[in-house]
Image (cartoon, rainbow over all chains, first blue to last red; front, side, top):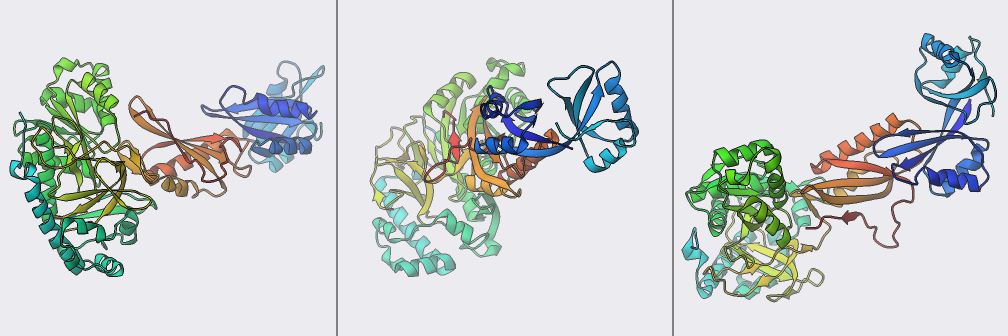
Length: 137
Length: 434
């Protein structure tokens, strides 16, 4: 399981910049990022290499912060790679809330992060297949 | 030409009016002392007996009555008449979710109809007027108050109630409406919808409008008059005293005549409670001297204004009050509905873990009042999933909207966004330019 940090942002200019800026200044490396947005608020979701430190920094800076568990999976970086993986999710009826990928993919493969409804049983189901789970970054 | 409904009373010489007022005040004080435990107890505590009221200036010996007293004696404790004589109740929202109740005997309904008929006449209405009552009908006094007054005057009365703008405009045209009764902001809204609904102002026969139930300004009056091509009048009232028709402007529009043979006005300093003279700005206080259901003695309205002591060219001898310029408490009037910030607060806190940091932002968009509530949310309530936050948002919106009977928008903000104050938190930002 991979920890994800979420921060509440308002749907206004500069609101995504502020949390990224404080993490950058503190030397925390953000390696994946995604935004869930609505008409009047957004959720900035990040995966960093130093979660404990990142949470402290963000809380101190006054942000509303949440930690969630995601499943990290290596996906082959070629046509159909993601489709093959999602076929497993479909077959096992694992409900995906959202997913996104690593900022930088190296060579032939990418890492993708999945938020699912019930994480523990989902991981058990995925282990039955030839799925490469990522435990740590 | 000046229209009157009861010329004899409306133009009564001051000296005779004051004799009538004293007579009614003395009768009233004796009546409530005998019939209402609340007043007897309060007067005994203050060491005043009905016999101590020898002249009008003795009014100041009597204790004040507040909205808190109405709340403490909810629902029927303030009634002086026996329950079998009460024929109607109206209510407005209070601070704690409890309604502020007003009870009426048939006598009170008759007085109300009469003062409202006088008010319509002062605004130039007559038996030949066609009056569209677009105040809400229900517990709110606006609709039924204007309705009974209009019928009493003998005018054609259209019980349109509020809302359904399309139908209102259609009636203006087809029913040849001459008179509009509604909140000033709704009047402006209607004016702006004329074109959108495919009408032209020349389709209408509007002559005058009686607007009230919320604070408004001379600038708004100009706008309404320009857009609706009618003469806009300011009418004032509150359910505790009787409803709309406590005071009303005449054609000279130099303040609103308080129907003083029924309602005795005073202006006090809201801090020291000392009575202030004419021309001084302070809190408006009323004593109802003819009602029997729920008479109120020295009721603090919390509305700030002053009394004008100048004879009016219309011939009416009853004193005028200026426009309401503010409140001495934190009550907001939003689209004609009374809202206390504490109602919003307790509705927010029905959700566990909600932060105590919130701010209520009131604005007027397209002439309609809007409320947005900015709420800081704790880490415990925050989620990485949009649907969780949207559920939380709609739950909060539902709770607050049902508590104050107005729809609100909740806006989540990050921790620390709402300014922390050293003393009393700034809970309300009212951006309306009235």
